[in-house]
Image (cartoon, rainbow, N blue to C red; front, side, top):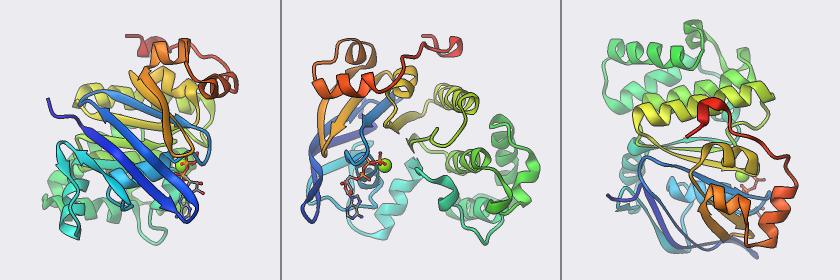
Length: 256
Ligand SMILES: Nc1ncnc2c1ncn2[C@@H]1O[C@H](COP(=O)(O)OP(=O)(O)OP(=O)(O)O)[C@@H](O)[C@H]1O
Ligand SMILES: [Mg+2]
């Protein structure tokens, strides 16, 4: 089967900083994949490159076997099968538009009639535990946790094959974090979505992902199946990251 995402030798500099320094990895379809690393290691840059929002200096990124070609049409096409949940979802919601306006834009992109779109949206909001009334609100009228779920709802409304979430639990309290991870896991299994979780928190990746890579200074320093990766890491850096986080056990709902 074609890989969901395959990255070969991605290089990207910001002046003196090598944000991506020869990154290669593959993410099989239908799996949950974690990208971990300390702040500044290149995780968000890699996500932006995968989305086609950041041009590589060298290397290639294929999404479902397709390399990104220049131009707006190609960007739009990529957005139709890969959807992001950004690090700061509140900032990615337009402050002057009601949530309904933002959802309507998805209908325009998909050319889906309003009634059908809002019927699907109703189901998604329910599943995310959001009240239907949220669609009439402006972003400043909802909480941070609700904003994150609204961002997820918008992403799901696009019917993506791949969901890529940057620090999806940042800024949420621990019980909401657990709910959100369970929810992402449920969605992945029921909709057969490939889920990419970016986090500096190894505990989260260990809990939800099957495979992961560890990034440092724009490089992948090690990778593999999360059980063995975090049980017996080869790299001192991975040990340091692990030591920085308390150990977690899998939640019962996530047992595989
Ligand atoms: N637009 C930019 N201009 C200049 N430097 C940038 C830009 N975006 C990222 N960088 C630099 O590239 C490196 C990687 O940044 P990136 O945001 O990808 O890290 P990250 O792993 O996502 O960190 P965090 O965990 O804090 O979100 C950092 O050194 C950062 O300062
Ligand atoms: Mg980041």
